Length: 186
Image 1: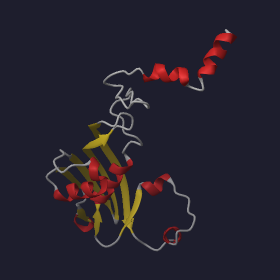
Image 2: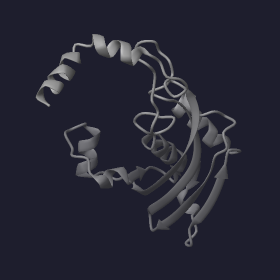
Image 3: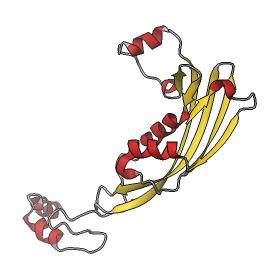
Image 4: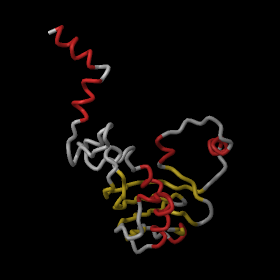
């Protein structure tokens, strides 16, 4: 969604959006691929304010995620709430900007993640929101916190049934000697 900065009124803009917005579905599908499906119910809100040439954008979005559990490999649907705030200023030639463009070693600060430049009279707030959706993804997907996963020997889903592999392989384990050693110490 592109916003013309010259058309932002003094009191700001308040924009609601939903899954019916084609621009959002396209960006999310392109970026999140299998974690996003076209029929997902998405909704959110933008608050956009202007101060001279600087723009402040606050955004939030509710988004279902289609994931595969890292432990038991079951598919499930989770929901995340994405919140972000970013400040945009017109692109101008600065020492820091030249260093970043030349890919010199520049220390990234927290402000760098909340600060962006724009050229011309439009900013794409949809890109900002999709970037944050990617950053808000968990490192690993778990269907539930106490997921038991799969048996490493027979592949049974331990959330659904137990197996005898653990007891059988515990006796054969090279660490079984430690169990005997523990009993001797007691």
